[in-house]
Image 1 (cartoon, rainbow, N blue to C red):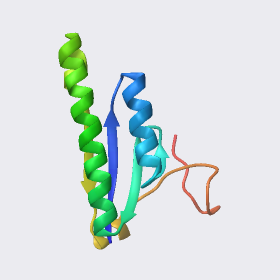
Image 2 (tube, rainbow, N blue to C red):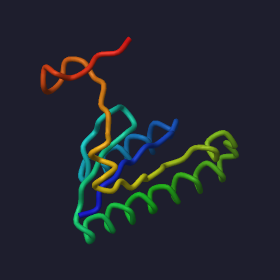
Image 3 (cartoon, rainbow, N blue to C red):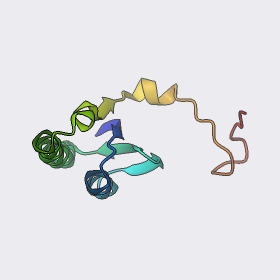
Length: 104
């Protein structure tokens, strides 16, 4: 299994919504533009291909429209090993176990 996080900074509503729909098929949303995944190799490869296809279309559209600001946006995939996951700290309020931490 391959584990990781996908985070994105896409301001174009059309492409941001399309990316979100792609990621919802493969991963769990943990924040508005952050998803976590745990996938077998073949499904992971399909997710990456879907993301690459969308990103190429997004960049082409931004370039053709002359929207230079859009060209600086990104999609990032961070991979996590089993030891890294064990070291993960999660601070959230109102979800999961009552022992969750709350920070202001």
